[in-house]
Length: 547
Image (cartoon, rainbow, N blue to C red; front, side, top):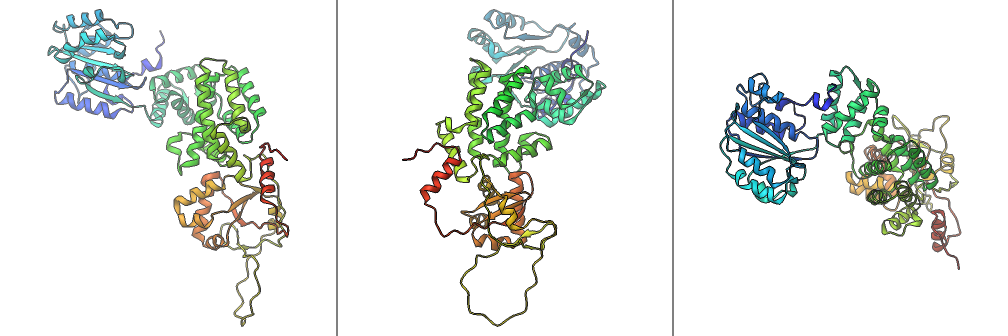
């Protein structure tokens, strides 16, 4: 009969246990010093090795020839406990044997000495399922057991245990296994099975398993049933997941305020029989990644994503305000709670329509998102009017490896001519084929994530960020044109300050930009501030009533 992977490759010694050194090292040291306790409590999430460590511990305390705290696996006790012929180690599932009678039988049996081993070991799994009467029946024996008895309790919900039980046990907390460690173990198992597992696919399996190696091995087993070369696409298909491409397109629809596109994507995934509850959870995780990219300089350790996925998250995070990302997280988490009791498709569609149409949402988060879009003038990329600027030529300072446009001061009143000094060095002319400043400004679009760049810049230098107070930026091709006070341009003449600004831009947008000045068109007629506010409100899609 075929043996599934998580059973076939179950660790036999403490050193084989993945990602739990805080448990295995301590247990080995206790056993080597002959300090085995009478009661242990193993806690942690599912699939992290609690029952496995309990079985290894049960063999180690009874092994005739232990090796540095590990069972030898060769003596008659180890072989007997492994094949089940020796009955001195008893495993009990408290989920199905939770009554007081089951515990009383354990108490009565514990007085008898072991048949062939040194200790009689009771492993009680899911111990939190025991009834109150069963716990009370166990208390006295747990506190003062016979010298030949060891209790090992395992649970995923330690908060449900009585304080009197906790105080009588040595507690060991099992952590969720790090995705990189889990991916390495999965690739090792795949190699032992004569199969090939891509590193990105291993990371994806580890991320889906959420720290549970048993779940990861089960998913790998399913993937190997489809193909002996496991790629991310096979993992997506085996786990019933939506690919990152679809998640990215849903996030783009939210950034562009396009509910029709979002509903089309959901319809396609529904027809492909994707689990919409899981899709909602994945999309919430995707928005979490956008949030990390917005607020962290290096979100890589928390994202656990491939390089391409991280670059895509950075690109999308640059097109969305932090308020929009947080509102999306809130909407998706609420939808996830409602999916359990209603029509999954309808609930998810309603959440996406609200996310893509802030004008339908009157919550404070939605209003903040709309104000954020109005202030940036981009309305989450929905509208952006090109502005023509009358300025001749486009000059730049020579700076390898790219030409950085120089800020030119505004023309002021003429001063009396001073004696002529030596002629200044001529400024570098733009290369042939490079667009001129007027051409760049004519095709420029306002950049909505400029405040995020200034916040990033402020983490390195608050004084530089203050110099850009009240500034804005426009994007035109490979150039980012900056509209800022003259003091900011004076700072940008220094190479180190330009490097800081470029680094902040790259962290937010995920791509490098060349820098240049932006000059607003001069107009003799000043626009009424109220008219300007109403014009920007209409551009953002906010309904405006006229008198």
